[in-house]
Image 1 (cartoon, one colour):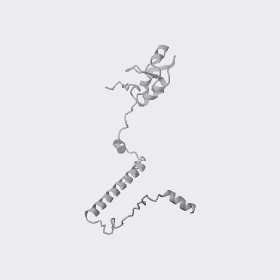
Image 2: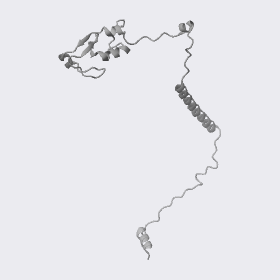
Image 3: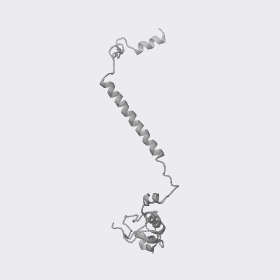
Image 4: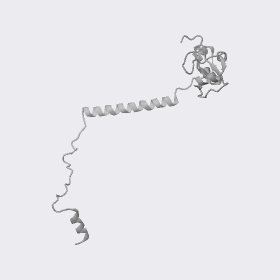
Length: 169
């Protein structure tokens, strides 16, 4: 006996059943009489049209957002155009005079322990630092930090209390 026959006898015992071979029956899944007609065809066409329309609208919206509307020409400024132009937006920050009128305090060691850092720059207050104290809330900040903040904002950076005199908030 050859080695190959011996190995085959060892792999498959004689009394074990033969392995089951599954076969595909094409007759059960015959699609030769498959037809799309009537309502089914109508719904497929409508669904495809809706998907196509949504895709085109999406592409158009991306194109509009990317390129945007053209800027209006600003070469001629007649008095009629100036009268129709919208007014400039109001300043959101404080006037430079109001910012300069805020009190500046020289920080002492006892105050430096209670409020340890400027919440704008996150720098630690040191003994002898110049800090501005905001009147409504008494919060302290480095003078340079709060000056930059108040040019664009009119409130305390920490508690948002308003610093405008004409404000009711």
